[in-house]
Amino acid sequence: MRMLLEMRYRRTGQFIYTKDEICSIFQTDNVEQILVKSPYLANIQFELIVFLGSQTPSGAIEQIALSLRKDQQCYISFEDALSRWHVISQIPMMLILATTGESGLYSTPFGRIEFVHVEHTNKEILENTVECRHSLRLARKWRAFEDLKCIDRNIHLIDYVELYTES
Image (cartoon, rainbow, N blue to C red; front, top):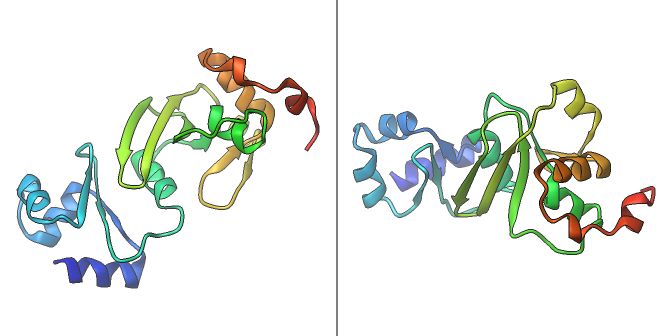
């Protein structure tokens, strides 16, 4: 089966599967048994199954995040975005995303993902984010700062000189 998943990845780029897709490929309904017998598959809180093939796709953690929140908007914000804008000097140890979906914390083979629920419209999100290297948008400096203030966390890390500097 590993070879089948490897060929599928090379042909389509798919490495993230739902439980139903994996059960269909393995022709059984016992996901737990599949996972025990297949060390090349990683379970993400029984929501997704990730194929750990010979190559790690670029932006894998971001693709997993988007798959976990398929029908919601997500963007990089909070400490993660502020670190990328050099407004805080610490580098977060996980991908921190604002989402219109549920909050949650997930461990993946590629790192941890934290989702924090926000009440923004799609229009507000598009106006206050920019495209970046991969598939997730990045909050502008001020949006990330406002998001962080809303959850009242790590405000003491802010470099206000950098925050007020145009970039």
